[in-house]
Structure formats: structure tokens, C-alpha cells
View 1 (cartoon, rainbow, N blue to C red):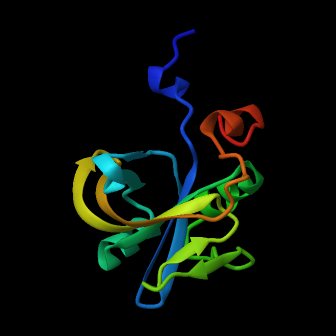
View 2: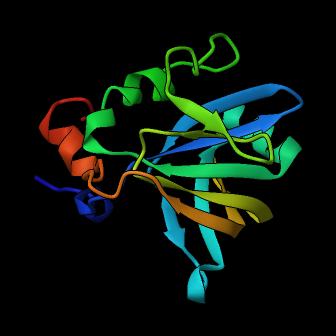
Length: 156
């Protein structure tokens, strides 16, 4: 059986949260990496048709929340529904930072970012972001990973 080399990587699972003019949204993102020395920049890939990318483009701000294994149910809530049609934050523990951008209070932590540049990457756009700050909320929790989601049958 041939397998894609990239399918063998064990990506950590994040939720990107953002807001613009009273509207807010969250999604699921696995393609995030540090892209500059000393924690000043990172890159995150966002699906072009998502409501999240629309709000990120308008506001220029986002929080990238590192999810824990305990948050595996957020895959369905944040990743398989559109924020255009539903309030993803209903019954979702979160707070709002001083920029008006939501973050998930039960996540391991989050990176507050401002968009710096964007590159076309097919069905996704890759945003290079300047890191404003990094906040650790729940360091004792274990990160949610792509491999774990496959093991428990939430993804193929």
C-alpha cells in the first residue's frame, strides 16, 4: 500500500480564532509552524472557503490555540460546521483578549498574532503572522495530534 509521506507526520491540532466588527469565528487548523528565530513569526494555512479566513483578512488578527486531547470533540464543532450559519462559541469556554479576539480558555495555550503577509497555496492561503504574545493556560494538558484523531476514528 502506497502512503503519502506527509500523512505520516503527526501534526498538532489547533483552533484559529478571530473577530471583526462584532463577528467572531473559530476553525480547526493543523498546518502551523514557527517561521522565524526567537518566536517572532509563524505561518498558518487557512482553507480559502472558511468564514475564519474571511474574518482574518478583514481584521488582520487571530489567536492560534493549541488544543488538548480533552478537546477532541471540537473537531466536529469547529471543523465540520460553518460559522456563517451557527454560533460556534455557544457553550464553548472562551474569553476575549484586549484586541477583541477570542481565545479558548481550556486550550493548552494560544499565540496572539497579527497578519504580516499571505501566499497562495492552492485550496489554502498561508499567512505569515507576527507573534504579539504567547500565553500558556493549561501546561499540564497533552496536545491533541493528527495521529491521535486517526487512532480514535475521528478522521481517516
